Length: 114
Length: 114
Image (spheres, each protein chain N blue to C red):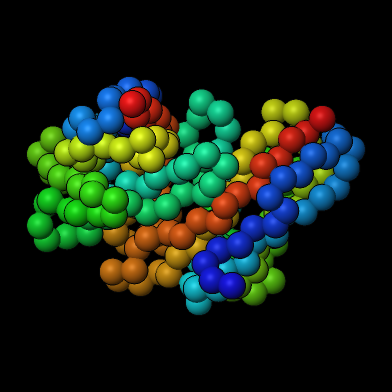
């Protein structure tokens, strides 16, 4: 498999549940990202990981907890979410380095919080 | 910090007509510029990018964009659209020294009618 793969594609969870989103990249990149895409709003950058280290957290609530065990895998652990957290969650990867600038995106996980 | 403004939230157009999707950016540093496309229930796919050199950039599916530094714009154009071009289009910017973190505009919905 090539590119950036996200699982599951769809997830429905209650507000008291705990679930995790998974992202895997097969591109040899050294940076990975989580974005949130809500209706009628720009894509919001949530977290940035470089060489497995978190380098950015854009004031994301603690009910979202990222994990990057290696440069190929990125998780987003979810607990006690709110209905307003329903959105498309996109994972992306890129290679830091001069001239290597584009990000490759997965197909996203459509999350519905009920 | 960078920001991106996409001036039109929706652009309706007839098949085989030309189209221009507008994008303006704001940044205190030199940037890279991108256009991504998102089809329904999909992730984002890179259409084209401007890194340096010629200000006219050609991308996939017959799209092109022109970088205008004085007007801080990066408008996307296609001389003749197809029904299959119906999608959401996102303009994005990243600074040249960072970790390829992309900042997105709110998106423009292109609707091509027969």
